[in-house]
Length: 390
Length: 144
Ligand SMILES: [Zn+2]
Image (cartoon, rainbow over all chains, first blue to last red; front, side, top):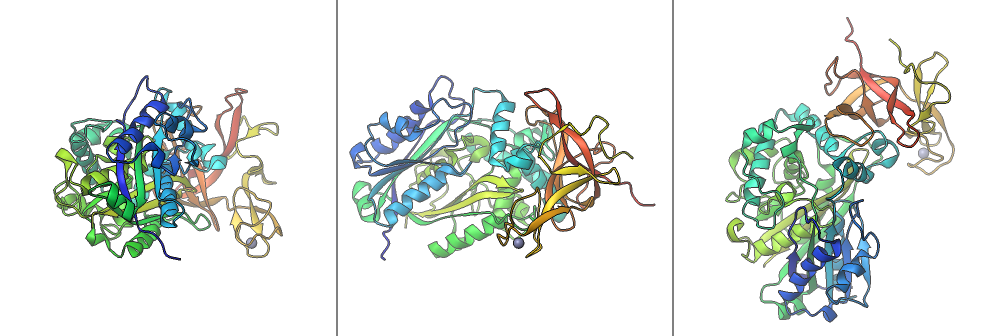
């Protein structure tokens, strides 16, 4: 069977943050509207839609949310499917849309993600998020997501030595980048000491190591390459879209991103590139230790050497391989169901040279890594998507 | 030192049903499932083996001591549990399990520590206001 090549036609993103007074249908439809208006795609051209959403207790519309949002932009009467895979939900929605176009089932498909998280007390939201871990033992006995990052960080530092200051520098980097992103949630001018002195959340993770809980939405219209080339001047090509889950039946090595390693390998092989070819990268930095371990999982650094990329400046906006130019989850924010497609939006803007003050110099290949959930401490899902402007 | 919380009795609720019981020597013991076909051990117990799918399985008492794989101390936690509290993963003889920790303030935790099982109050049942019990591990005294 011949497979179609696939490209992103255009993207849109709402502001991320505490969108007080806005219903999920409002900011959700704003993201789709932007993606449609910035291309010549009409609502009637969309043949299918996939929507990532986790639906926390803060969200009023919990079911048929795709239909409720897309009604606001006149995208109706087509298959609309919600995809739930914790914090990686919308990347998984994007990848489903990708497969539909790749297989020839449809020519133009919409992928989006949306989440409303603010407006309820923190402990209620935390308990809700604990449902993205094993609910029988871990969630029931107090595990939290920042706790998972704390456990990872302690195991990592026991194995490879202290990287506490480099973790702080990752937070500083992402906040610096976020200050250049007008849609980012946390606009903070912070230095290393601010991070190290912020209040402890889950040792050794501190408040400023952790991403906020946000509201927000992001959307991407994708199409068969030949069609995308007719619709826009600069389509962004999808060179790989891969996702895998954890193994769960073996003991976990908490100092290693084994799941990333497996999925990255598949994606590099599909795209025919390696980590050295990347010009811009977005990773799942729900906590700073997450970003550092993704460097290693994606092969940007050897095992135990992630911190060297921070010390050398390689991952800075003007470095060899800039990571999280958008500000990442840390600064852009983390509306869980929307984060994955927001990463895609950033890569598209970067690869088109449209990223404004945070533009990376002349990139041609970008990678987005997005994680979701965990069972027995091992990732629920990790995704890697590779885009290029060819 | 006592290994069962003084408030625990036969009518007390467990967070995970059937996961822990008091053995003949009055000490707590965790109950898992061992497969007779492939020897795979799982916790908490299951009606069949997730490794080979056989239902030729039986209850097995897990080791009471193990090694601390990793841990954290949460300062902001779930509703119904008073922070700070510690949790992590423990490697027992043939299975790695999630656990809360106790006595971590007295003897600070380190990866690789020897830890032992105790039966403790885990949290308050938000509906009944009654305590719910379950397993915790605590760091063991250094051997002289
Ligand atoms: Zn078996």
